[in-house]
Length: 146
Image (cartoon, rainbow, N blue to C red; front, side, top):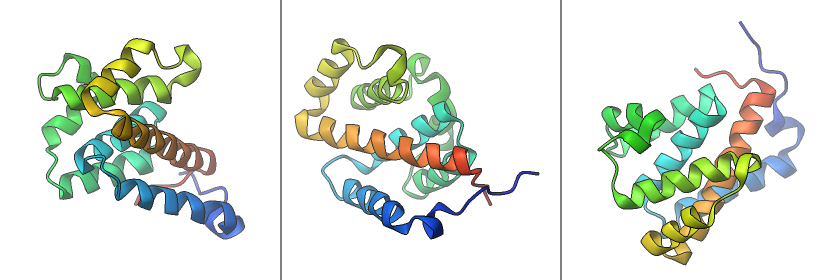
């Protein structure tokens, strides 16, 4: 069994606390809570962060998300369970999370803006950046799910 390598919150609270605040700020924006949950779970699946997958899936379910849809996130493109808005945010999440691969395509970005508007796309990008930071902290320090 792995043990946590370092407690970043204790060692570097000055860097850790602003990330917590960013997450809280994003949660108060006009980005729909359901979209924020999908961003968090999808990016965590891509990044393989067990702690975040567990934590954010639990939060999503508590807010009314279904297990069926969460289980379909690994193949969301082929799933009938997601709306146009959700598909736009999931495509943006995939491409921004895997940014080094090909960047975010014009088509994905333009579709997201067309469907969600510039303000919500801006919030979604910040949400994607934030969860990717959390995933990297979780993976690098071996945060263990309860």
